[in-house]
Image (cartoon, rainbow over all chains, first blue to last red; front, side, top):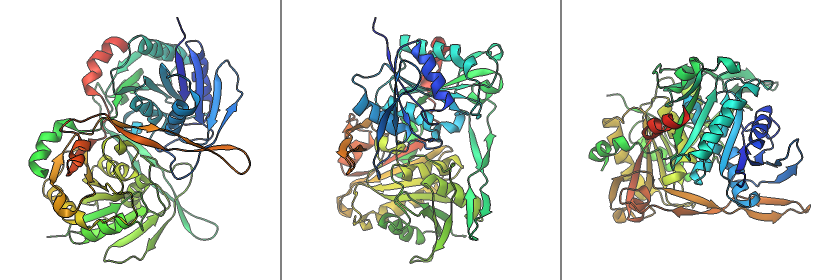
Length: 254
Length: 254
């Protein structure tokens, strides 16, 4: 049987420990091609590069996979891989492992998840992986078996059309992880608090900061599963229509 | 009765004709504050600025509104306005008028719509407006009455929690517009086709280009309404969970 072709990307950049670990885990399952940003792209959401141009390089990194770095966003990487690098459609696209959570509302800001969503828009099977540890030195080894299990299950049982998976992994030792829970996106948001400073020329400038406000303790919410020591998996769709409100809104707006 | 406070933003930049027209239309309805990008931000999706800093300026443009230009993305503008500029929560956030369509899958790439979605995440009423005309010299005047009507209806009948509106307006004379249809997001995608060039130093570079592929002729899809001469309104939600697949996926993944 032919090995599955797996496209790997991320938003922390092609040399980030998170993606290098994911590549290692995927090399044991399939033929791997990496097309990832040449610089950090955290928080880039579903941005694409239309007002400037893109360049790419093949680079040599450890392992049997091929690695290409692109001067664009995570979504650019998926588009570019499909149009210019891959010679056949991949069996799976995986994005990550992100350094930090992409649970609940973070799905919408996350370059990691936007790459997976873009692959879904392209009709491909796709999964985004994130570890709840922002550190560059995060320990990804305990996630290996869990990630490989999820990937194998998806390769054996293709996801429904229009769906990709958002997988978040708690920062726990392997034996402390209680299992996997399929969840809904928790109702949460960031409360912004711009940090105001003065530059050496006397002009104000601002850093975007804030704190995460989880307003949802539902047993089926991803934040709850993570707090309880489970890996959370949210099936994410890119049809953003609020179908349940169409009828009501017709009576008001038409 | 106090005038409603309306925050206006966009992704084409604060001086774009589309936003200047929207500001004029909104000045007839409420008290207007504009916080918009100081440069074009098309295709920025839900990007936020976390690796660099932001600056803003109050600028003087025609009309009674206050105008602030920010060195960030459309989503940054909404966050910054709420935290640093507005002294009370706005009654409505409007984004646009975008120069070009944000119907169907474009909602996911669009800075205009991401600003509206961010306002929704903040618990605010929000509408994104787009005209199906990419031209900088597009005629926005025929959209005035339609936009004002939609805004008034939303101010009188608040949208359900977790919902914002994606309004697209066909490029037609006022009397040719047949009315308004509340629609679902059409199943469509961009087929990318990177345009390869060689720079003066002999290195390859690429422009992202492509064509729009509408795979959906459903009578309730936004692309169909627009093609038939209607203004399309899609209620957009930011809970991206595919709730309808949770049970099935639990049997496979847990």
